[in-house]
Length: 111
Image (cartoon, rainbow, N blue to C red; front, side, top):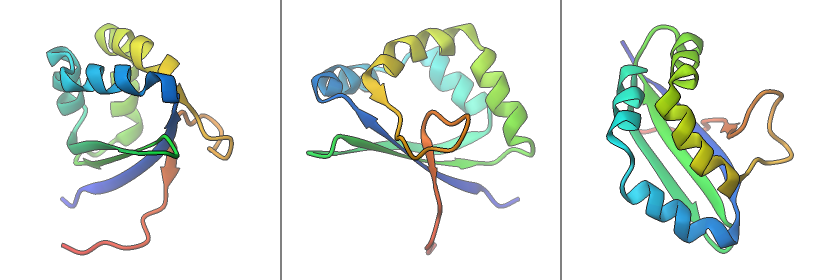
């Protein structure tokens, strides 16, 4: 099975960058376990300053992306984690309906 590659973008409050970095320097083990249980691999988040944009990249190796994302969203520990991260984030005005992080189109890939 080939992994589905995903790129996502969101803004981060300039005043929240230090806290965002602090949180992600020590992600809760249960959050990492849920990410893996939901078939996400090779997950990275990058910060671009001074624009204060976060770019996330991950590979999905499961067979039902929507079900796995619903499983993650229903997890109480993940919900608690998001309650710390989401106030620091600012979704893009151009995101699609229902998105928090805006999905980015892959236009090139080379293995």
